[in-house]
Image (cartoon, rainbow, N blue to C red):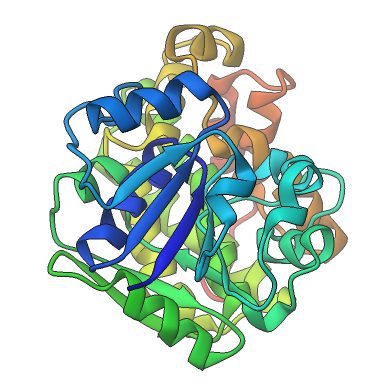
Length: 333
């Protein structure tokens, strides 16, 4: 039986722990607050994030990172991308050596432009062929409801990807293995920013033509950045690319989509955070993606425009006009 330590007791960390348990394993959720861990153990529910999901007995919770990591066959990291480095500095030394470390995070680190697998390798001292990325159209609430879904499990070492895939495969969660870590991570990170743009369009009252246009051109931006960084174009046509992009851009369950809708209705970032008590990953990563694109000479006008709106450098109503006024060009170039 696989024992997994899941660091991060938010929606996706909790839902993925349930996926692992339903695949026949044991999971220990690490929560930063003792009262959260105690409530999960007592009530079998993470009431703050997934109150309708009754957790199996094979899932326990703790606020002690050493206890969570002890004896683990797998480590899963499901924390906000921009605090990953700080968290690894705090408790990374507790992670056992020689076991796969799985990233559920979808972002690019501010200041460094590093993908999450690169941060795990650099700050956590984990060999690159032991870092695994899980990505795809995986809205946590639907996973918690055990609705059928699939995901990509990517690692430079295929046997490690297959090990992780075996640990999370169950009747409603179907993993596909991959070795293109770059493509899997870029698809997951950029789609959050594109989902903000789609949400903004919806908040402004625009319909499906507009949203489909943003999704398609957003995929083109992702593909250009992927090409510059050495990603396999086929990856972005699969679950970690198009699949995740569609789910995140179109679903009201998507935090990035919903955040963008509120921005489109005229609210500021600070106002949206105040009413939701959460910040969407795309808000945190849009600048780092824009900067990474600039370093590699990649044109990403949607990502640049979203960053300008988020940072109060552009009114949301100006974004569409700016994008529509760009010079005409061949669709594929």
